[in-house]
Amino acid sequence: MGMKYIEPVKSAVLFLLVMLSVILTFLIWTYTPDYKYIENTERKEILIKPQKEMEDIIRPYKAIFRFDEEFTGTVSNNAMKNLMKTFKGWNVLDLEPVNNNLSPNYVNQIIGADHRMTIFFTGEVPFSAFNTIFQFAEKELPETTFNRMIIDWSNSNTKELMVYYISGNNQSLFRSHVSVPNMSQFIQEVIEPAKKYGAFKEIERENQTALYVDSNKMESVKFTYYIEEITPELFKNVLFTDPNIVRRNVESASSEKYTDGMSLMTLDTNLKSLNYVYPAAESSIRIEPSKLLKDSFEFINEHGGFTADFRYASTSTNKNQMDYQLYLQGLPVYSNHVITRMTTIWGDSRIFHYKRPYFSLDMDIEAEKEIKELPSGADIAERLKNANNIALADIDEIVLGYYLTQNQELNIFTFEPCWFVIRNGSWIKLTPEVLGGVKNGLE
Picture 1 (cartoon, rainbow, N blue to C red):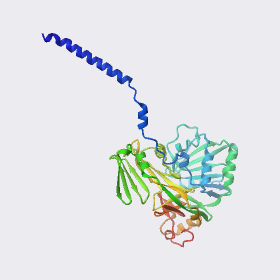
Picture 2: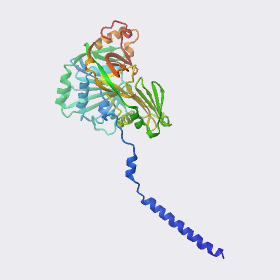
Picture 3: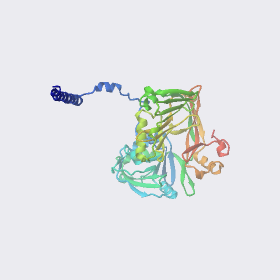
């Protein structure tokens, strides 16, 4: 008798299960999440300082001009800004490789020809970085870089310029014809004022590219600034996926650590430096310079991380590393007391390592300003020829910059104008001890 009802019961249960499946499927298909709730729980965008444009970060540090076999030049901050503004809207009609095995003597000849200006960049700049400045006719730009741009205005009456791009690292030369929307404006605003710039001297070196330095004594201002410490909590909220689970640990009087178990942020309160690392993102896959610069710039800019006048300084493609140097009044700032560089190392689709200062300049103390007179760059070059510690042949550049010291008790920074040499990407402050001579304005 019981067997008689088993089949109907099984059919009823199966029917109920099928109907339940249909209802659940319908609910899944028609479900609409509460987007208002999701929006409210998303992390808010954090901007530490205002965002910047790529041309604020990619900026030359020096320009020289050749008139009647003589050089003039400038490192003026305003002049560099105006140059970048002048380039806006230039039409690059072509871009051709000319030489991929440049000799130093050939570079010196190109720069030394009359009616040419040379613009110097600290780091090797990918062509794509000029996409927002120049109008390139070619959609596919070469995956290469340059650190000197030479503009030949000898045929300016044709409304076209010849522009050369030199890469010191790759020993390569590219050339392009450039159509300038307003040639007379370029001549009046760039070339004519350059005739009144100070004289520059070419420092020749055997089988090496020449150095170009100011021939006259220099006057520069010593500045003293109050500093503003950027609260590390802002960086914690930017860098960690869930800031609520981050643990803070004070290691010592000068060291603090923040971690969520996956990444680590370390503070050095003496150097005013922040060091963030996400070990899981470490990668040995090389990234092309154009993408590396884009990713690095966007990462920092998204949280307003360019908290002062930081400029692109160098690339190490083997490490996927980008460096940005602090500048003040158009001059680089170096220090043994606090960190003055930002560094990013890109990993597997995200930031792997981020090192930077966590201070910004608040206000300069007017009463502490002081005019300093320094020897000419030409004089420095002559002293280097006789120096025991540094060989002129071994250096990459002679630069005027600021040496930064701090007074921790008063929370102030002092910027002292000084001469430096750059060698293999590192700076050396030129003191009487280094040069082996009398002070004569060096300190």
